[in-house]
Image (cartoon, rainbow, N blue to C red; front, side):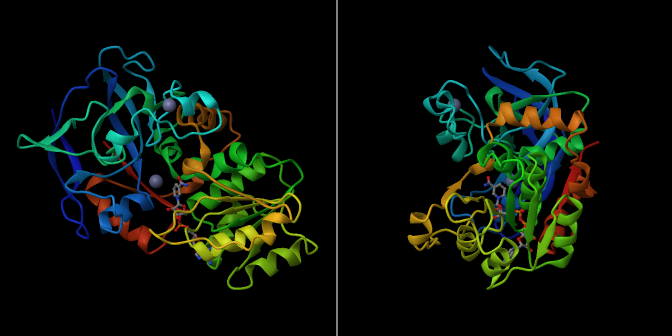
Length: 368
Ligand SMILES: NC(=O)c1ccc[n+]([C@@H]2O[C@H](COP(=O)([O-])OP(=O)(O)OC[C@H]3O[C@@H](n4cnc5c(N)ncnc54)[C@H](O)[C@@H]3O)[C@@H](O)[C@H]2O)c1
Ligand SMILES: [Zn+2]
Ligand SMILES: [Zn+2]
């Protein structure tokens, strides 16, 4: 079948929207009609050529949501007509990691996915008979995608897909980190470094868990104001004395929970040091550059601070994304504020430009 897709032809060049072919789903796979897709930093990171594991040509996009069109042999988790969120981080429920309940790093399809293939080692995308690789197991900058059933969260049909798509990556990362990874306690004090999509998700998650004080640390005044709208109680400009700013706000002790959502290693260090002596828990969410190192003075650990991290905020894709969608349907979680621009697939490069200019939080591609 022919479809429109945004192809990364060459690193550092704009994506080229064009017709390519997508094959039918094989055993265990699902054909999804994509209705909406967020434009995330990871897409831009790969498009720029900075990602050492990147390859091209390929169809980018991973923050997708859509409707199941067709299922391959043996598929039991979804059926045609179901609404789904695409997961770059699958949940097979059967591998040693999934069964442990301790991690979201599913081992089922990692190797093939990382190389751009479906679990059987082949792609479903092609152009003029030439195979083309998938990206992050999702490739949702396209009208359709074929994905393994274990990488789709089956969600409530009443949730708007143009908001649910944000739970495929950015929003879930911060939300899940605060709710399930750190399990922020009621009445606690929280410091979030970075007020992008990920940090704002952590702010909202901490608020949902009943945190009493939520400090947002971000040099951008606009972003700090936004965080206050999302539930932060105090805004700090950060910078070299960011740790001192948090200590000053907490009687010299530091915050019960800190979250780093910038990808800057020096800020990760600040998030560790701003965590409270005795029990402060620092959760690192940002993705640092290749080879960069985080330095921690051991005294901060001996005196009781803990450091953890989590891809996708530690969210178990099928379980937690479904739960977050349910929360939004019940009116407990408002995702609408994260969508700042709505664009068409043809404008995908505009989405990158807006992100580079830090204009808004998320551009969402809407498909006709
Ligand atoms: N763990 C995951 O699975 C996962 C998923 C998505 C994104 N990420 C990563 O999370 C990070 C944040 O993503 P995002 O989409 O929110 O990015 P973003 O660029 O939208 O937001 C980053 C924010 O950090 C702020 N900032 C810059 N310097 C700062 C400083 N010194 N102190 C405090 N704040 C500072 C910026 O003003 C900006 O508001 C990135 O590194 C991204 O790659 C991780
Ligand atoms: Zn698994
Ligand atoms: Zn992403």
